[in-house]
Image (cartoon, rainbow, N blue to C red; front, side):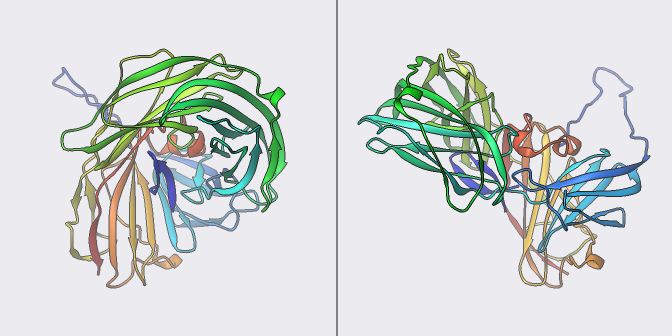
Length: 416
């Protein structure tokens, strides 16, 4: 499943804060008092749409989501673990205390060509970025119109016949090689349409692209842990103050190496949100930083990735009693264990704030680990998302705390 768009490259992917007493011989510890609650939850897909007909398991109780994606289970002791049972995949979230969690019915969004934007022909030496953002924040997309062309088709999420309202933003700029130098035109248009298989066409004429923005700059450097290679950064522009790792806007310029310096616009009708995403590809880690125009000397510190500890690579006889453990890596965040196998097993995606977990025993629900199945496992970390309650308080597309990721290497094992 596609969970996030990693820096420059879409990738398949889809958090403990530890407070330690210091300066005292008697560190303060906190405990969570179990509480009985009714869980009224909702299951949504990557676009924020309700997912019906999905089975939910909490503490041995099972419910099925209705047409509105909602379910109810009574007399649940907190903290609780919840498992969402898809056709071939289990999505689990551990340690929740919410009575109204928003749960992922999938860990990704499918971007399909649903929106076409036409503007006056872009002159030589220029490009135009086109950004769509719906009012909910769940559905978004962007594209580029190259010199000599007058249109682009944008891939967005959403379902056929879904009604979408939002804005389309267009900003045109000149280039020196691959570097942005000046901004020449800007315009925005409120739109409402029903998603269909044929992309909806929206036209900007000359009178809608008359604003000539000014220019400023942002600059800085990327610091990666020792031994991390292929440092890259990229400048994204968005509107409506979006600064989410998933929803960062249109990429205008990319940089190889530790230093970056980008020309950014000022004076647009809707304030431009300037996002700089930085990352390394070996190991895979990244972070997004939102900068104000005129910021110079910014520093983006990349975090070390989680390290796999047990079961060892190539282990045999692994089952639901086996403890999986891993190092936390740098920064705070929640961990997503991605456990995928071949014929006879299921895919398990388990989100936890801890540094260890077991594969859930869901055999009675038709989701076995399988006998003698070859699996791989790795840990993705969603940095700065402070616990599983935070993850399930809103859609990931809109979570302002989701500002970075890490992805460990992969180890293999064979089930019992």
